[in-house]
Length: 256
Image (tube, rainbow, N blue to C red; front, top):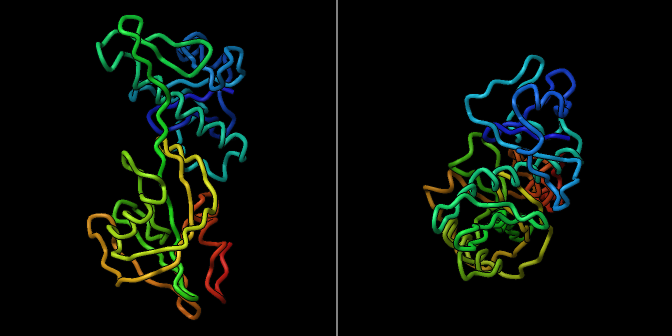
């Protein structure tokens, strides 16, 4: 399979969602040697590449936002597409050494772009982020973020800062975003989230103290939801946020 990206859009056949074969790639000027293998072995059958923003899709094909392909591509192809996007983005943004500007060279045995002049090595970037669902008795805290276009409510989340553990990030982000203190952190699960290069690590936590005070540049609304409250639109099941919330729904709630 060949994963051809135009920014955060993936090239697929419009009628069948099939990915382009090598013949089509060559027809649009993508030679085999410029495609990156998405596994460390050079003979990997799955390859990826970024094209320039002005490139148009060939007839019968379309560039589709990667997020929009959840539920269109099966789980295996979606996971591969996420990996391919991160590899392609790494290759696109590290063509030159970040120290001296020399063109970087791919190390064939690992995911590394190394400078032949000063030896600086660049690896694919992974940004760890925490997610936490806070419980208070029979209620859960859900928030709507200012940066999302939808009205969906979800769990709190934030990126790990230098020098922090995941647990420290949870305490800091919860206090910054909603002004609460929490305890009894329990690991729930993790998910690679290639938008563009995150690893989401999800927890539950128990409310300890404080009143909700939202960080207005981050949170549009945050409130406790419990039995008898109307259920808001929540994160889709395909995301770990959706799984986390559905595993802790208040009594009487159900969600597909």
